[in-house]
Image 1 (cartoon, rainbow, N blue to C red):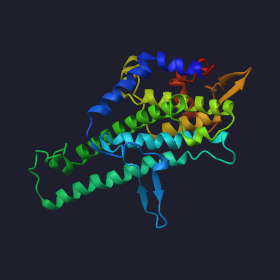
Image 2: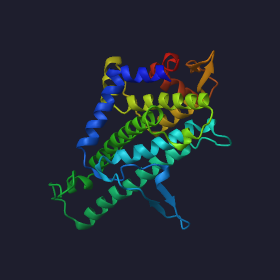
Image 3: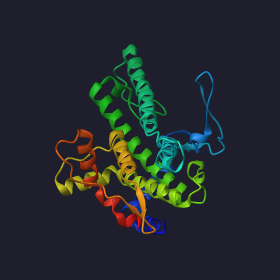
Image 4: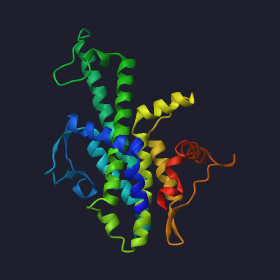
Length: 288
């Protein structure tokens, strides 16, 4: 584990710069009221399907992506450490459920604003209401409404992955761990799980920067790639399929096979294309 920690600490150009960007976002954004420490251990599911969240002593104003990132981090930690806990299967689908549920609820609220304005028949409103970013008139234009919504969700998803990545790394190399990792008695297996978590976190962290992706796309004369829930799930599944192993008393990664046969399905091709581009993040040197 010491080498992978040193790798993170010395990566000033990518990892540390992105952490600084997210730190600034956390300290300067007042988008919404946050729980501040939202994870799977802070949620009750009542018998009537109601959800209760407790332990709100860290409640504060901040970016909407922060709470989402904390919850996503703990779901991914549980999934990538499942091999260290008997009879536990990775619940990867919960990540997709979390993001899609958030997006669906917020989309309905977004569209309800549009419906309210249509009923008012007031098309002259060009100044945002107090506390709102967008002008009321913008919601009456389908193209501008859809474009603003898609840009908003793209930013929130990237930030969510970034905050999740930081939380995942902190739980592995910080002072406070989580039960999913602490309950693994075999220290070697726990270290393997932690290496896999950090590998995924590094991928998520670097993809949190849309400007970096745009810069690389311009330099390589190609269309910028989207970083979305599908690519995140493909990343998780690939780390699960090619996990860290112990060989000669050293933790190593199983190399991801970049070349695939044409007969393989579309999902395999998607995995190959994604990790060819970001393959530098999965070098064995990171986990030696």
